[in-house]
Image 1 (cartoon, rainbow, N blue to C red):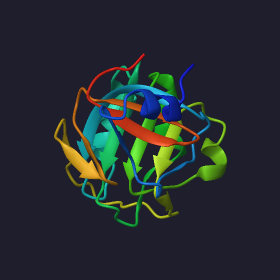
Image 2 (image 1 turned 180 degrees about the vertical axis):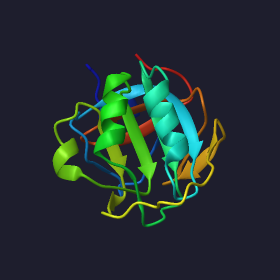
Image 3 (image 1 turned 60 degrees about the vertical axis):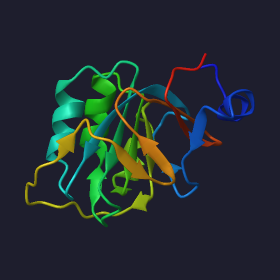
Image 4 (image 1 turned 90 degrees about the horizontal axis):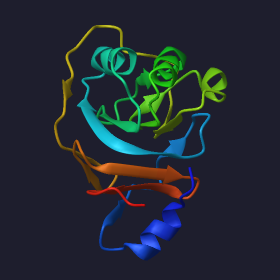
Length: 159
């Protein structure tokens, strides 16, 4: 991936929004880019499992809002699904686990931090809705570009 978020921000300042610095990359890829798929979860990750396991993620980034609840919603198994289905990255407004196991999986995974506990009772999630967190609004069809400098979103693909 031959892009740098800093260059895009310099070249297109009116087109980009930058996600808060609170999000850190825990995945094995240092960069990701792709079209946004949104999902809102209620602590449990069952809806996210379906997306990552069952859908082609080529040139896609899944944006997950779990309201910063202190439960892990992505771990080793979901990262393996993301890799198998060619997702470029996952952004979680919440927490993740299995950091040792996922550091070599070539998918970017941005999150607020880590938590070893997941939420067991199954709850329903809602996908393909607008989300807002970290100072950024996300909707299906937006584009995410992320690297070691940060995560940015734009309403159109940048080249």
